[in-house]
Image (cartoon, rainbow, N blue to C red; front, top):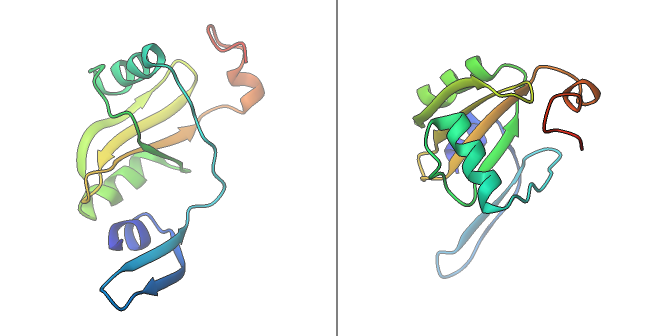
Length: 125
């Protein structure tokens, strides 16, 4: 929890403790989207971003203003590196780390507005 709250900067909204030692903390992650991809697409993105098609089925992706700086902060805060900032064909700068709890986290910085990104080959969304 400390990594996500203090290093990633997700504000704590509320926390609950139970009599049997249960604990849950609700953190504010900002606006969220759900990206659903088939296996072929997931493997293609994993290969592009990390050099290996064998990434996890679920990962947390967060948009940041400065991928390089935020990646350095996460590494200093206890994350371990998977892939350094890498520019994608759809013009974002992505990096990946393992959180101290083992969750894969992708940081991405959009380098162009959405209407410009849609003009790139393969992104006719």
